[in-house]
Length: 88
Image 1 (tube, rainbow, N blue to C red):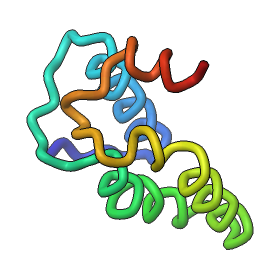
Image 2: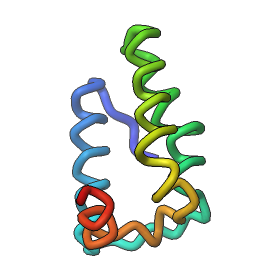
Image 3: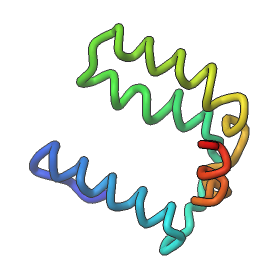
């Protein structure tokens, strides 16, 4: 991967990459599910700069609202339409 001098640069690149993936302009090829991504990638990253109470709140929100409908979905199968349906 590419190294970044500043955390803000890395965060901007991550947001841009996720937006590209969700818009369909790039295709994710990982076999990771949304639950695995949350537990293994996103939550540990957020824990670096968040309070323990915030991390616990994220866990509760994930368990109650995200995991039941999207947790088993492969990241490569998450689409804007699927996310819009989930939000309704």
